[in-house]
Image (tube, rainbow over all chains, first blue to last red; front, side, top):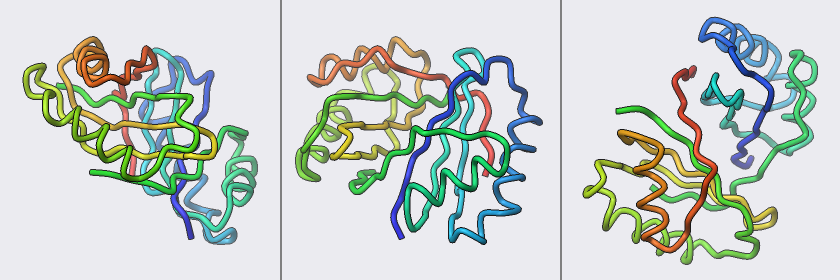
Length: 83
Length: 83
């Protein structure tokens, strides 16, 4: 398992409730791919969403997001973290 | 105070130690701007760095990163978060 950040663009004006619903659709199907979406953040003015997850591969994340209705090709494997 | 994600590009091949040092330079001066960088993640293959912070404004983050030697103009205010 590795840690990933994926990025979605074009979500201008999306509400907190819409983000919550989109996230719930991911959570409902993530287990089938061995993915877990830990957190998601939205900048509704710039239309950006960032999802932090653990997953076996980049492709597993892309499959979950695509089946949940919000595909993205922008997925980064975060092999280094500092805090 | 608000939550922000900033993104740096072009960090291909950066090591864990280099990220740690860059993060330490931020931490050393962040208080002067009322910023706190909570976490930073690196994808050394794609050269992307994501920094999660709390700050009074986007500009405060930009000033800290610039003075620490790694400026970026890509800063998002995350007014919505789900987990």
